Amino acid sequence: MRASTALRQSNRIQHLRRSARVTTGQWRRTLTYWLGAILVGVVAVSFAEAADWAARARGRLVHWNPYVMLVIIPAGLALSTWLTRRFFKGAQGSGIPQTIATLHIADFRLIDRVLSTKIAFAKIVLTTFGLLVGASIGREGPTVQVGASVMHAFSRLLGTSNVTARRGAILAGGAAGVSAAFNTPLAGVVFAIEELSHSFEQRTSGTMLTGVVLSGVTAIALVGNYTYFGHTDVDVPIGTAWIAVLTCGIVGGVAGGSFSAILIRASKGIPGAVGRFIAQRPVAFAACCGLALAILGLISHGASYGTGYAQARAIIDGSEHYPASFFILKFLATIISYCSGIPGGLFAPSLSIGAGIGGWIEQYLPHTTPGAVVLLGMVAYFSAVVQAPLTATVIVMEMCDNQQVTLALMATSFLAFGVSRMICSHALYGALADRFMEATQKASPPPFTKTTPTAPATETLLAREETKS
Image (cartoon, rainbow, N blue to C red; front, side):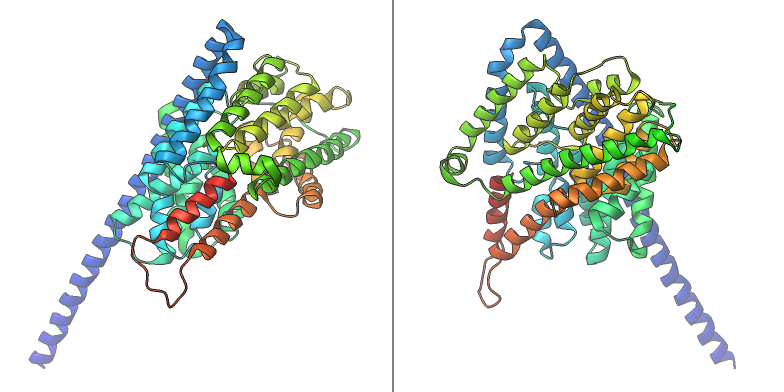
């Protein structure tokens, strides 16, 4: 009996020791991920401050002499493209398609390249530089890839080998990036479910939710509890006011669907002499894009430069009224900026274009509150571009701190989504991610081919992605 009792006590002690080791390891892992999420918030806020500084510096330059942009933008885009191709292959484009692709790529050596700290650093610096010289780009898409890179780096630091856990960290980083960039925590969660992963897995939901909360709290602690476009107190009551829902949903859906279709077609390559010129002389092509952007900027009196945040906010609060030419020129400037191959996102310019559409439509709908029509135009165009209606609804709702228009926003968003689908059958980010995956499969060596660890597939994939952007 005594021997049996001693054996039970010994087993119990061993069990407690193993449990203590597991608990310690779990807490170490949890605290490391928390630190990563906080760092995402710090980086996102710093990125936002750098982007705002670039916008102010560009504004002073345009005010001094608007014609100087005829030199600055072509030279700036050419330099950015050269730096990207020469030193930072894989940094071009939005960053969201790459993040989506890394959630499905099996080769983690390739994921380590796409989500490296070098690429994340280049994404921040080159996007800020693009905003400085006047490209029509945003910082929110790059922030998604930067957030995914930060969380992926912490996952590697922990030596995580479980595929689900590593992908969960990437997903959490991308969602945390959206949360911190817009100060929209709910939108970060919805974006991760609807756009990044297209699902909600119990095994990764805790990491994602914690990352979103911590990055959001960090952003609030650093810059305060702000709303991206301020507070709007408008409503769209059921009745004749809902004509705006139909109008904005259809117009925004057509415009956003056309935008996505153009970019997807451009990503597949342009045929003929123009396509050969782009492939053989990418830096010269970027300079040509810069010249086109400068001309558009002169026509729009500088309104087509940068993110379009100031113009969108002015349209929403009614302090400025822009003609229809504003959203048309911004539409063209954003397409040209993306096709040039420089790093930069689409979120902020899309919101600006949508606000311009709403501001143009509201003058023909006097029975509806003007500010409400602007919000409907914004959510319609944004939903049509990304083809993620829930994400678009939540982002616009949180950015304007207005829950009164939620039903109208959702109805407009889903209508625009349906119209966009008729024009462009594939979602923009999903289509670009599919192209990324296709390049991976074609570049992968045959199963029975002996290859070296350096994987030429990586170089081929990044080159293909660079060409398509």
